[in-house]
Length: 302
Ligand code: CAA
Ligand code: NAD
Image (tube, rainbow, N blue to C red; front, side):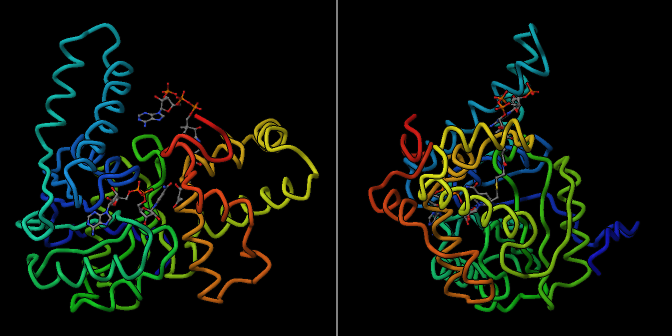
């Protein structure tokens, strides 16, 4: 079941309309990539100011891509951006946002209760055949989905930051995920020019299970005074070929998101305690609202 079974059967309900909840770092990126690839997308957040921030993230990214794709042809750049934006609607009313949606992707704050509250509400009002997917970094899909009556149409659809640039999507199946749902998600990720991998509903799925303990260990190494954060970042870029060092990457992902992941794993108790032991520096930065790039300061100042 975990192999790449890109079978030829096209799923019955091919997806056209997608609603994304959360217009932050990830939600805005998912909206953009879906819209760029011809899907009709509704972006939903709780307040207009968060929608506006999501639009800024999308516009900045589209400008970069337009320049790259249509070097000096300003008209082509403009029509690329406008045709993508024409596929995007926004809403601050979560129920209205789900109307006519074939696929709902949740990319809201990494909190189990908040995700469950949203999905429970949507389960009662969204199309009965709409697929539900969570972009969670680390929470169990089985836990998120258990508040709905559609676990056969539920899976994890885990994108990577920055969504427009990172080609990977992890598809996380729960026992109840139907083959049709799975095939629909394979089809959607390929239409978004992404490469899907499949894994079980285990803590951190694939990438985060390996990446987050590495990020934490870098913090412990610096906390012990073994090396500076700058040298650790330089070492991992020049010595291990990483595009970003662990402190740059932690600030990029968001220290609140990282802390939520580790706290959730510690509570879960399924991962070796040493791998997820808390890091004082991370806890203090988040407590002080220093969340990394998204708040202007984390391990580094931006
Ligand atoms: N929109 C569009 N294009 C973008 C972009 C964006 N938001 N961000 C970067 N790019 C493109 C640039 O246009 C550029 O394209 P070309 O190479 O074709 O010119 C390319 O990406 C490189 O960008 P930059 O030149 O600006 O900068 P860089 O070389 O430092 O790359 C980076 C930036 C892509 C973020 C790179 O540093 C990188 O890949 N970092 C690692 C990111 C990573 O590990 N992400 C996963 C985090 S874990 C996660 O996401 C899961 C979770 O649950 C926490
Ligand atoms: P973020 O803080 O940038 O954005 C979260 C957004 O969700 C905010 O705009 C917030 O207003 C909105 N929101 C909160 N409650 C909501 C609700 N009930 N309805 C609608 N919107 C609501 O967070 P992010 O970094 O984009 O992460 C979002 C999700 O994606 C988390 O589950 C995170 O674990 C996961 N994720 C994050 C990354 C990353 O690198 N940051 C990568 C992959 C997955």
